Length: 101
Image (tube, rainbow, N blue to C red; front, side, top):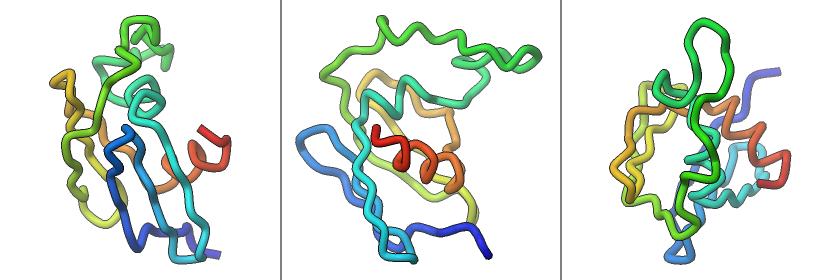
């Protein structure tokens, strides 16, 4: 079975991302959760895989300003704190959504 892909992505003013998947599942993920789980090298040690971003330093009122696709496998988010280097694979976004973030 192939990995689900988003068919619609929307940003809500209440600081939430909505994803409609091609299998009809809908996930709603807060901007704060996405930022805290950023997979980039600034937020996760590339050698150990340990998260280096302290969630306590991420503002609760953080917003996603915009997003863009990365190839046919990921999304990149531009956060109101200026962070924009993390690429969230569809697989990782689905996992975050399934955890009920």
